[in-house]
Image (cartoon, rainbow, N blue to C red; front, side):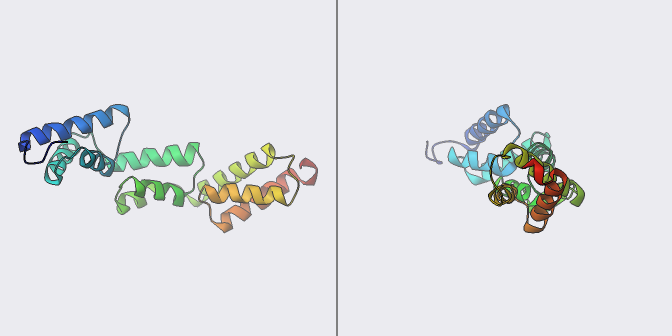
Length: 168
């Protein structure tokens, strides 16, 4: 990695631009992720801001859009809770207000429905496990997905009622 004094600002800008383009070639990234990637490549902070600002102007970096897509993907496909999705977005460097706006699109009903669906799946795939161990396993799986105790136990109770004792 060259010394920051060895390259001109234009050369650093070009290096930062290449880093960002390479990262964006594989998937969308947040401004924070791209800043970290440039830091790892030795790009000075002031140049990082210039590169990132330009990419935002061009619409190639959009943390709001990224956050919305992340919510759809992680909650919709993986069944993660609002809290878990928010933590992931925070780790990716998304601003708190952008995170709040994105996760607020997950309604309480959506979250409860996803928890019940996950509990249903876990009960069915672990049917050979005896009670009360099965209930603990399902509750632990929901907790790992970021669901709080209230939603977890509500989902567990609902699915146990649906399945009845003869199912497991």
